[in-house]
Image 1 (cartoon, one colour):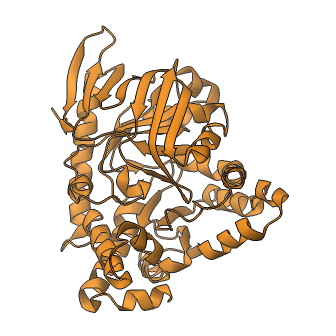
Image 2 (image 1 turned 135 degrees about the vertical axis):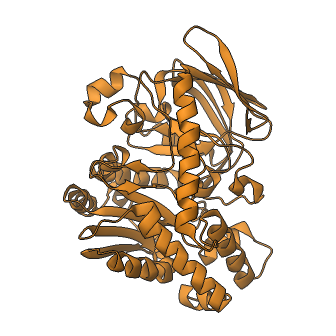
Image 3 (image 1 turned 45 degrees about the horizontal axis):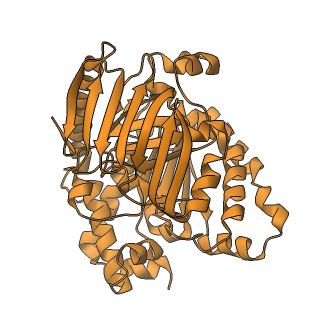
Length: 420
């Protein structure tokens, strides 16, 4: 059964209105698309109805050209089951270089998330790792423009049958899809009468929280909870960010929709202790559960997972930077996504239900004047460099967080997962 048929089963009038609102906030609140700007969009085939709505709103906003690159998950499986061994070290470098060139020429970037969270869970972990590494290397030029916020970009979600079945395995397919769409609309504020205004107010609240953290000038954060006693040193001249940001091209965008986090750059050499994940991580088609990691001098020296351990091991072996942190983010347990009680098995959502850390590439925008610094200058301030950037969740209603100043004085930041 195709995605268009699945869409048709949903309550037509209400669903169509919410889908249109989601496309509207994606273009206007998330992307901040400029008149005359090109848009490069990526999506799976299941997302075609949302792609068409976004395309419509983009052209109404003055887009000069909308180009969508589709992927087919079933074709991906055919590669793993029939491709030659050497093929897994190959990626479409020409395609990723073309995307990077589009961004250099001023195009905006919109990704539609919603693939099967366990698509590759039964495939050979070594082949999965090699394929992911090849893509990471090929995508690096484009990723650098994104992590440096040179362009306006955003990510939104589309419900798909496979994702809905993974979240609601005991429900009929049409009911599962309807429940997932309802959750996406609520988390993205698309079910409100004026979602653009709602996003403006929410964006302001995230900026206010980031401002408070910047005024405190903590040099480190101390996380304590079940299986976790972790001290995360913060990069020199770090900045806390939350909500939207002005990209290097002057456009204001909100990169993740939904978003409930404020985040900054850790110091790559100043992370010590042990941390345990509180939610599963869906990483490029594989579920990784019950992650436990120990850091010394900023580097992962011990890592294990109850499920998906081979994929975890190969992920942290991607390069030296894959064993170090590139992001630390704070999210209250009372966030709407956590309050929903749902495990989305999708990082875009689950990272906004809990405080989290990310292994790999740091965001230069989280450093004072970071966009103007050379790679060597960024490294000297503690910013990490890697081919990957993988967020995983460590927060819960049993997590306490203290801020530690350079003097050694500490101050409570979160208690039982909530802001103090």
